[in-house]
Amino acid sequence: MDHQPTTHATHGTRVVPRYNYRAQFDDIGHVVAEMHDCLLEGRCVLSSDVTSFEEEFAQYIGTRHALGVNSGTDALMLTLAALGIGPGDEVITVANTFHATVLPIVRVGARPVLVDCGASDYLMDPDQVRAAISERTKAMIVVHLFGGVVQLQPYLDLVERHGLHLVEDCCQAHGARWNGRRVGSVGTAGCFSFHPSKNLAAAGDCGMITTDDDQLAWRLARLRHLGQDGQNSHVALGWNSKLDALQAVVLRHKLPRLDEWNALRGRVAARYQAHLDDLPVGFQILEEGGDHVYHLFQVRTPWRDPLLEHLCSTGIDAVVRYPTPVHRQPAFLDLGYGPGAFPNAEMQANETLCLPIRPDLEEDDVAYVCEAVRSFHRAHAAR
Ligand SMILES: *Cc1c(COP(=O)(O)O)cnc(C)c1O
Image 1 (tube, rainbow, N blue to C red):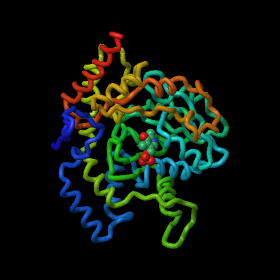
Image 2 (cartoon, rainbow, N blue to C red):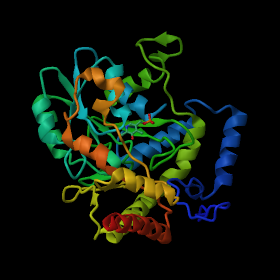
Image 3 (cartoon, protein in one colour):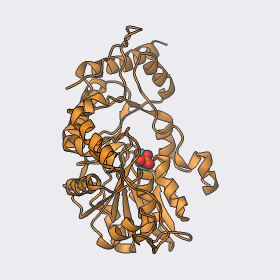
Image 4 (cartoon, rainbow, N blue to C red):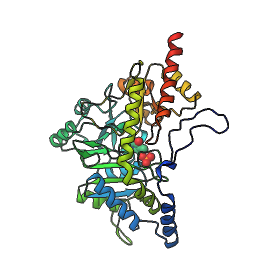
């Protein structure tokens, strides 16, 4: 396997980057040769490469259908639209998530109703969702945030009881399981992103929708393709949102290694926890039996900002996800949620940072990061 050099050539200081794209290709020549054929043959849009990847992804997730689209954002937007959600409807989701979970709700004309997360799992609180259901609620979007899987039974009960749709935002949890099933195969639909930062990374923007519902898949296939059901026959108002053939070539190459990569991420996470166990830092703790594919590894401390600064100054690519929760972003202030509306989401935004995590992160890199966290605490305790 190729390893990214972890010593910076000019400064001689060690660096621990968050991404290593070299390590994601075990045969780049093969990928380039396939792209070469695509380019010369003009196989660009909805070609056999895309169909093959859709079939392989559907099989991997365990659904009847998988439809490639432009992005994870579009996956969510097209799903909500295909479910008939629009003006006058409400969709419940969580306040601590990436902007792109909530934006699609507004884009289809519906109203996002936000709830808080749990204090230690950082995942949407089902009791608050239950309390937020109204006459106008049409769907819930659960987010398997940071790679941690949401316990889905309470949501399946709400689906049953209130006739709601359950959409799984799986953009950070490709391959994770709930009750033996892959996420994205449990709800009405699963929405995935293959943005280069994700556990399964394309070479640009694209995404996927998974579903067992034949009708929904049929509507989605129309919606992503300008609402057409045949050439020059536009029967619905759609979008132009397709996964490109070149991206499918990259993703087909990587998908067979995803489970191995997720297991390696889990090993890095276990090492972090073991090394940092005696320090006054918190981790994302899931309910008993919850699966985690460690898209991000969160550390919680009241000294978040100085710790972040310390790590960055020692060459460690730590980052905050997300420093401003959705309800405090200028774009969403008109939803009317004030400061303090969601205390756990705000605590998570203020007190957590992500240590670098990748499948190929070496043991000595992990030790280097942990020593930096440790030296920060020594200096802090001495003050
Ligand atoms: C990345 C991400 C998205 C959006 O995916 P894009 O492909 O960037 O549009 C949506 N939700 C979550 C939780 C994400 O992490």
